[in-house]
Image 1 (cartoon, rainbow over the protein chains, first blue to last red):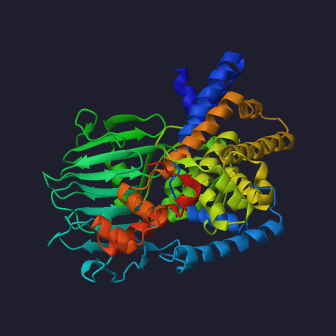
Image 2: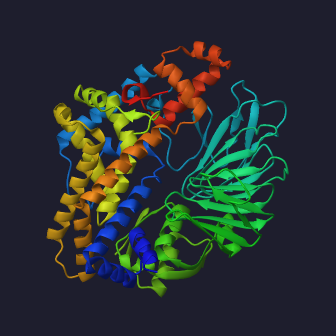
Image 3: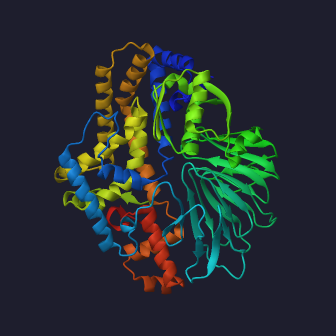
Length: 380
Length: 194
């Protein structure tokens, strides 16, 4: 019981009542303090594993620190800034000389708001929403083409010996459809990227790699399983419809099944029906990243798939989880300085409202002191 | 450190940094930045300050690169610097805040004692090192093989292609992807025992 509260406290998800309880326990004896310190160190060590993501952005953050966050009082002296800027230039040059193969630093800068497709050789192309992009392989053969808001790959034909991967990345505020070469349909939610082979190999499992949230309608193939790899969890299916949400910043990885059956298992294990959790339609598997537990329970399927229709449905969701959803959906930044609000539970359904309307609605049920400046919303 | 695992090559790293080699700096950044941010998040009361703390760590390293000669363990050095900056920040917060909020006061007290706990520090410093070593070993196998042949054994792309019976293009794309994922110069910093 207490262990559970300590782990909530460590994750910052304890209610203020639980927080107080844990704090009292910690300070009540040296032994307890020691036990807590140990748990805290172990928890911190475990967070070092969830650190995927865009390093380039951070690196550029350090080399052009012109607008430090307002919270940070310590200004970096101009002299260091200058040396940092020079540094970034020199790094670029170093690469051109040293590697001479790719030089992503000199590539044209791609807007963060664009849907992009990264090819196997590392080139990144922008997919405009109603454009007609074409994907060609290294020999110049057409392997895929864009049709409206969908990218369609040609059927597996001929012979493929080596997997060639493409990666589709959808920014905040957008969604995109994908039809893979085996006929599997995938819809990518905002802030998501999926890496998949242009053609699947014959007589091999079909493997794709998800970072974010997507809805899969997998073409049945009783021999070659379809496996979605996420950071810590793999989902293995033969042919079915399911939603998988695995954003790196979220605590839970949720797999919700609509039809057929899927197995969910730890990425570290090889698949074995004994170590996998089997899901039935209408159920979801909720994987807790921090304690590695899987919880299988009946799911509110609509709530997990509403995003396909551009809606957000919330049922008893704490505000801090809502913040992330809204940020992704509306492509805004939300700064919440009202920490009490974080644990408040909300139930709501948003359809085509603007972010203004969403906040007005929140304001009716919970008096919220907020300000909207363009894409930034500050709650005090 | 277990046999057969790569090690962090401290001396070479430090001597290159001292000479002002930017790619050594960028490699260090790419290896450590995110992990140090996680550590800072654990130490601070306000997680949003973690990134700017760690950016300061790296700016300081670059600024003081000429005097890195006294450092023997780069992992420990980065960890300790991050920890010290977090400690400064906590002290600063303490002064700034007038303790109206009791629960905040206790929380800050616990954090403050935790950051100075030696057992926890030691555990975190060691964990950090072993996670760095692991992350180096994470490149896909084939990619890593080709990368090693090219960068460690100095083979030409055409030679690798011939040896491994694959096309020149495949070699190119594996190396490009190794560089893209890591942008690391393994030869210089990591002694890989086969």
